[in-house]
Length: 324
Image (cartoon, rainbow, N blue to C red; front, top):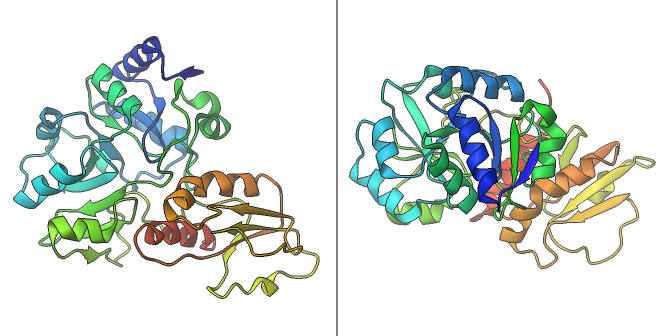
């Protein structure tokens, strides 16, 4: 069932579903989330079942206020507080030590919890109405391209969701930046809309994600955000000649091509002007449209890995990673 999020009755119904152990898909500023009461293990188990998500992959818990934060986290450092003051509400997830009341299923048995305060008004309204912290991964089958509109959720999960709140397209289009605060120095676990430069201005030095293979936060698996059609990232020089003769292929272009390229059956342009924020906003929807066309192969142009480009290339690399 899809209801317009602009109606107060929709938010009221969604809050009741969350409180009584159900699951609700809702928009955030990043992507659509599939949410439940984070303190209800049975409800959390439904999230894993609906997404077919492996239980070693922890969830992000969404909160509306500092009172809820204090109930989930035993203490905060000065650096933690500075980051929250600067970036919350917004697309920054912090990995912090957790209190014992947080179910192990939410955190994949880790002693830390991934937590953020979303800025989207629908997400905020749902959190206030539900009155509980909401555990919410992206609202799509595990490993597939993330949803940025209500129709994407319906196509991927269907009646496995009790309710879908339609709040229109997500304004940012890529998942939150995830920063672990559990060690001596902050560690970037997943790039997102809030860039490394912005974080370093507040928190000082930031380490890159560890290569130990341990999944400490969502989005760290080698293959993720993936289309069903195989995808290859082109070199910075283009190399469109890699397209074999007779192959039915689609192209994900960062900016408007200078000329028509007949080697591709379809071209999705993320931003005609090459603006990275526009490209990020359109990334997942464009990948879904290309994937739906039944091509033999997809190709993607790279972008400069500065600022938001780091997050875009992270998603494309995981999409292009081979199946194991």
